[in-house]
Amino acid sequence: METEGNTGQEARLAFGAALREHRTRAGLTQDALASLATRRGAPVTQTMVAKVERGARPTPVEEVLAFARALGVPASALLGEDRGDVEDAQLRTLRAAVAEVERQHERLLTAARGVQRARAALEAVPREVLDRLDPLDRALMDEAFWTPVQVLQRQGEE
Image (cartoon, rainbow, N blue to C red; front, side, top):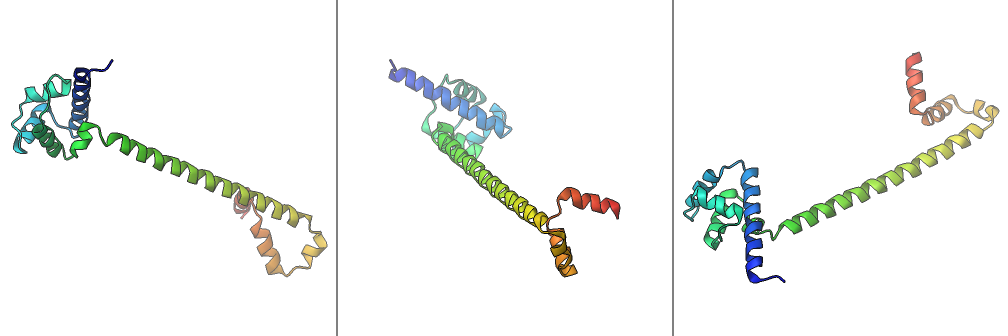
């Protein structure tokens, strides 16, 4: 059974973990964060920051706001309210990118199959018909169906 005391402790632990994460990400010591928070409206010491990060001390609203301003993040980032939204947005972006890659892959496969069919059709044209083509048309036709390996082999011969 969840009691209000357990919920409060869990909230303090979550807030403390978020504060530590943002502080370390910003490259700040507890003492530096305390100084910045004090300059931004709440008299805080390094010991108080340590207790907050451990979840051992409740954090008044003034301190939450001062910590957020000191770290350059919205207060909701420290309270854990926007973390899920950010992760959901990142997941949606990632899923959209994967879907786009899959669409592009399918388009490439379709194009490759079309080239293979065209090449097979060209190879099925009798030699005497090809010989009667204008030299420019024949050259364009030959070049259009070369594979990358054939192009490299031809460059090696020149």
